[in-house]
Image (cartoon, rainbow, N blue to C red; front, side, top):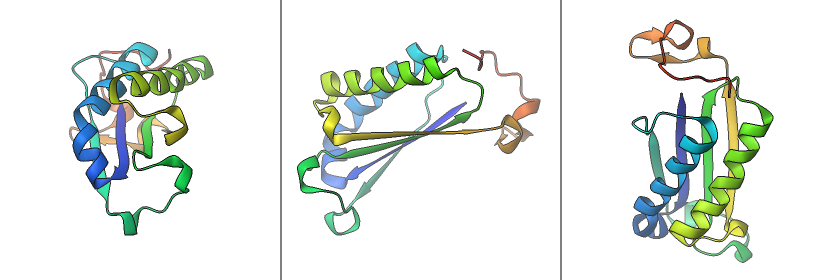
Length: 129
């Protein structure tokens, strides 16, 4: 399971949401062997007064927070981060300097999904990649 929040200036996210979503999802599918039909993205657009960051990041500054089940290898998580930077630069035209990524991992039993605890679900895909 992976839930993804994308933060940025409201005006920039409105323009780039589709390309960002595509870039992020393809990286998650490739790096984590994630099912292509599982896509959980939330775009959180903020006004300039609500989103404070250094001027060298520019108006396309984007923060990506990924919440997922624990169990992925260090190699898989590093591959994900590298793919995110590359895909976002290519598809959304946001340079890596203006993107920050954080991965939050939690035990499956700390998730509630479809009326069940995450450790009780039959996922249909591997988490330990």
